[in-house]
Image (cartoon, rainbow, N blue to C red; front, side, top):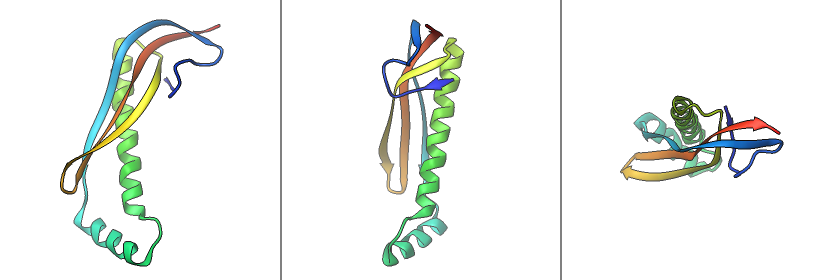
Length: 106
């Protein structure tokens, strides 16, 4: 599955637009990781625990969006965007949305 943030794909034409597809996940922080992140916050540097959590969430949302697009018969997703929102203290949602399309080489 080809996924892009643009509206077009070089050397391909869109032959069918299937509609909006999305994938999301809600993740909560872990107390053990919060302690390590707090220590890193004091001394400075990247907070690897949170970076890993976000990376895993991003992959899961993409996987869910791709699964929805495949059910529609798409072979590509265009105009992909990510959004985050806080659900409650310590938990956040990551959402991926895009447009499922059928493409073919020009």
